[in-house]
Image (spheres, helix red, strand yellow):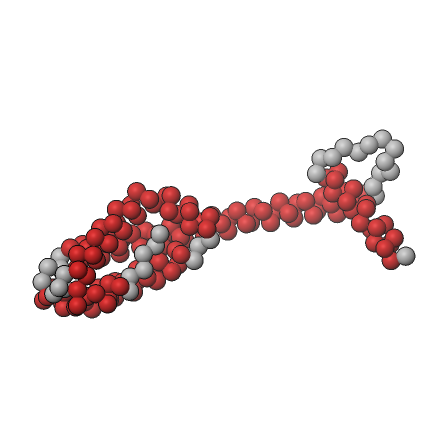
Length: 167
């Protein structure tokens, strides 16, 4: 008896949803009560509103990630320039605290960017690929140069190993 009661409630609601989705009513099919078609319409409107709010939230999240990417690229560019200027042991020793601070800032942004979902991360990478690739290559080349240097590597090697690159 309970199953029959459930079917009596579900079938008309399904028919109401089918009608609200644009399905045609066949001749001989009993008309649904107005309250059911109104309920189906309200459910459809609520679903549309929810989808629209989701789109707005996604756009806001993408804007925030763009801001993070701008900061990341700016810091990465500064890091690359700073690393290019390190040629002596004195330069390396003097730059080490500033490098550690800059790497910490870059790592924080990398974590935020890396936390984006795969779809958002892909959009970001595509949007900024013209800037991201060259900046990463420059920094990696300088890290390689410094790390392999017999005098500079021991001073900055551990600091530079801590850098997280967004990819």
